[in-house]
Length: 374
Image 1 (cartoon, rainbow, N blue to C red):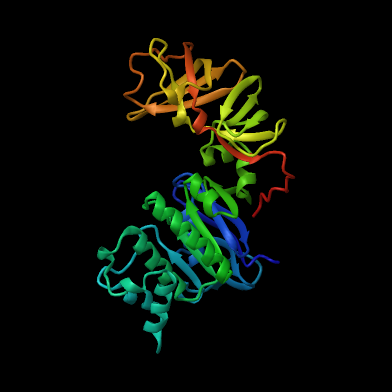
Image 2 (image 1 turned 90 degrees about the vertical axis):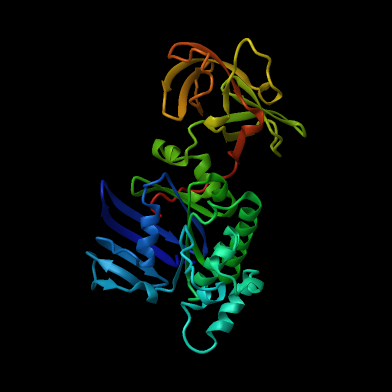
């Protein structure tokens, strides 16, 4: 099936140039990258809220934007693009009820009935006459999605849709979003900086770093095999490693990481299988040599030598060379470990917390070719 949405644009933005090339079919594509990488600007260009300097955007064979490419210049206004946009702050009209917000993009007879049907779909019909200030964050998000669906879009754009929601609401909304995408056959482009969001809803991941798409592929595959150091940095998974399963029971795994044995939570993997895993720097704990160990840090105790310490006003980062020749990063509040000498060259004991080791993917799966150009 050919891609429904194709984007190939360039735009100068302050200190860097946005150069994004990608395509998407009916799916959830996650745009992932650090703040300031160009993710939201990409959504704005697709929606018609900003005009790129050059390139082309096409939806289902219809050119929405073209400049500096073969063929006539094209600019389709935002309201004619059949693209729904859910902003990070929801952007609901505070003086309108939920029903009035959803009905706003609709025209003609039956607008209120159509809006009510959309609220019903989002399980909000009973709150149709409440104002945004009277709704919870999750309810406001549902109203915003219903309003975006009012234009019967082919593409739905969402900017950090889960960032302000607590975990139960977030998980519920993630499931509803996947159902909407499947039922309506939508192209969904979703901006997030949260790894859990990407795994929960994404079919494919487009990593954007310094204004460019540096890798595109199935979510798990991109995490398993970052194309380069920039991708790994953008994903924020510096402590990414490959290991072999040497024991697999209902109690947990034992992994061989270049001669270093680590315990990990249970996972249905056979002995001998190669896996990719990571541990967040915040979960690497420095141990006090003269204090008893808490239960959370009794596993995966490893010795190392401090290579570098980067102090900050609130958070310090420590790079430690382990005995197997690998390096891990620890990150902790500035007030932690004050009695310890953590200067470069000092020996330290670390705990790579057992419960915090995340198996990203079974590395033994057949590898598909990475789509580096979108």
